[in-house]
Image (cartoon, rainbow over all chains, first blue to last red; front, side, top):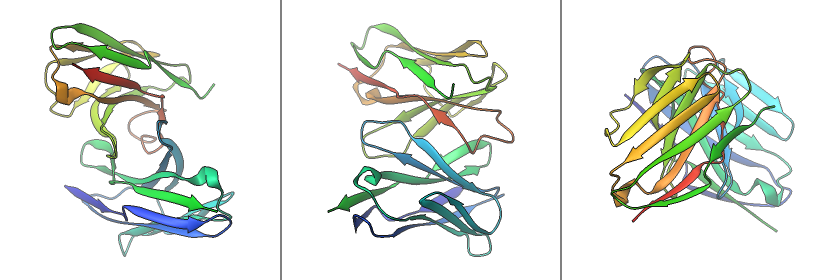
Length: 109
Length: 115
């Protein structure tokens, strides 16, 4: 089985930095993915960490610590368009991807 | 072309109707997925096709019947649905199921309402 824990809501100011945490429990860990979903939109792949450390892609970075079963998504220079739900996801058993419950990020002016 | 298309965008159907959802991708991906997503919930996996063969059925009721006519197309046939089946149905694809399932490309979804 697996479980993924992430905060349900986060609010941050435009231009600031926000970190969305994800802790996981799963048998046979292979890597942690992050997806973004705007209201009414499709989930969009953001990043994947299979190894410990920080992966940077533009304003977004993702971090993984396998020993702590923990990862986070870091969003810098927040923009209003970053308001969305963010899901961490892991493979679990035979299921290629199981999503966490999602963190709803609200960016305010 | 990194697009997954889905039709229709919206669908309203009665409990006795039969309808189909369609999904198409032209990225050469060999794995395709159906997910169900309720409001304010994460996507939940329903089916996985790998190289046009059904590889995973997550104990989905038989009123949902998937079909993969070829490597680019995925259908979901619906029959005798219940109001609780109302949801956003998302199709996704990835290069393959084994090594690249962590990076899935999603279509915009079909918003289904069962009356």
